[in-house]
Image (cartoon, rainbow, N blue to C red; front, side):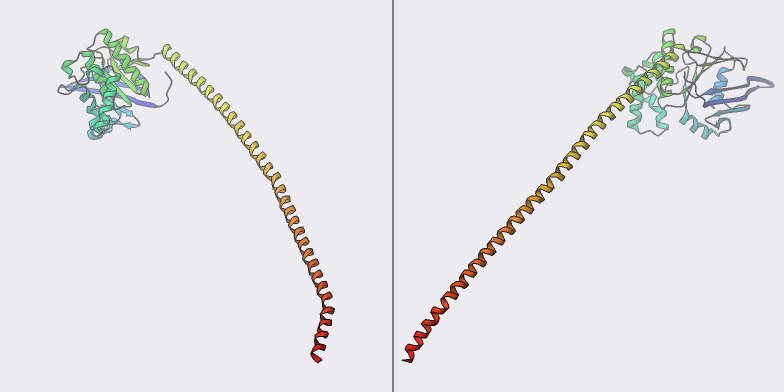
Length: 344
């Protein structure tokens, strides 16, 4: 599993002492440890070792006698009951050994129940619950009540109810205590796979070393004290993570190459378009002088024509003047003749 440096749970020198008359029983005796975010932690011990008491203290179900329990930076041992209830509702989930389902409700309604307190709209919570039940393999049992299901099926409903609101931390107290071996392994695989998928922290109590092997960290408890803390390696998971990481790297490399190729193609297209645009501009610039020259030639032709017409008009005028000049002496003679006749 990928290491996480963020602490989900901190237990600091915690003690729990019960008083029975004059007798004092130390159920949890000064234990300290941390659980990291996304970690699967198992409290392993025999009956009466104090493991379930420790789980209850961590979940805020019981109060510590001394010491500190810190979850998400909050000292839960100092919270009021109301604040603690809201905190559990928001951040914590629970899987119980005895299932704790409501007998009058269907599987779907049981899984919906925590979402009602979180005020999730009816349609949305119905869909969330249905999806979660399908995920745990109970698509055909949505409308069945607890008494109509086997122990394994009831525990699957319990798991779906614990995980439906996606709590950051899930506490599981002997979650497979009432199940046969085959169903036990199926339930454990289910819990772990859902937790891994959502990066959730699991704190599980068990007396069975086979179940403890599912965890990343095993805290061995005896007589209320920690005997030792065992870190469990999961080669298959590491290989899967590495394979996924390698696949992501390959995908990123391929994506980068594809993006580069796409960018190169786009650049080529852009260069081509720019070249065509430049050529079009050059053609436009080349065409403009020709048009201007044609206009000048046309203007010159018009001017020449005007000059010719003007010259022709002037010549015509001169001819007319000459004609008038030629006509004047004759007119004068005629005038004289007419004058003479009148005198006679």
